[in-house]
Length: 297
Image (cartoon, rainbow, N blue to C red; front, side):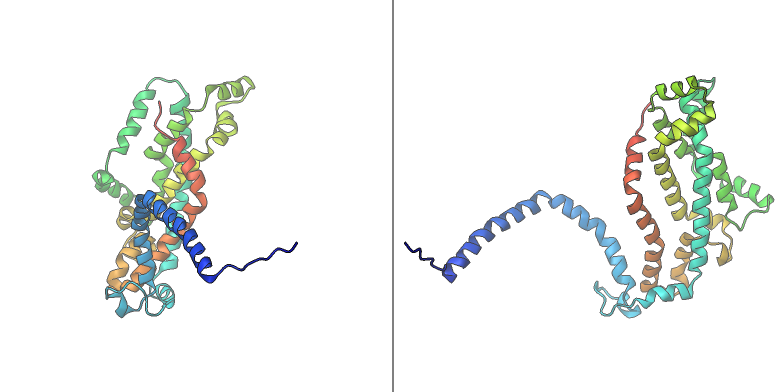
């Protein structure tokens, strides 16, 4: 007995493809309709950085037009930014400000938050209320007297008036850390005390390892704040470019180069790229820390 296999005709193949393509298109349309809001929001957030990157690669003349796509890819714009500005110096100043400011904030804020969360003493609620109150005080209100203090100390025209106050703690970080620390069960610290640990050793050996997500979150908050801070470095950075940070240098970049938008966008891309990369690498612990430091107590 022989079996005869008949090859499908071209019309049949096309019909089968059309039959299979129709459900795929339908599923695609359903998927787009279901996620239309998310797609619109994603495009809205992606459009500015995409426009920034494309403009940074245009020529001077094309950057002044309404065209969105570069005719030629001018990668040398980034080299021109380094050649025409003190970008490396500003980056070093910004890293000094953000790095030391973050370390000093953690060293001073963690013990304060631990005391407010764990210790029972008279005036604890008043102390916490004072911390909350300082968060509502705009820095511009005390700018003149604080500036005079630093001027008499001879530390203006430098970043030390912005770094040294971090040794006194940061109200926002103290608040977030305190909210997390009160969520840790007291059984852990009580057990450590029964084993003979002092308060300081309990903090370092028991509490801090459990509070790593919250500490990482406030550290990233502080680093991003210092990196993007414009008011403080503008007030204390001085008139010499050697004392500026990236935010101050970027703000004046446009005036120095007669509104060369391609170079301005290239400089903006170089300034924002490090914090974007840092966020992508630390986003898991950052989101976890923000979630755990929810308002409580």
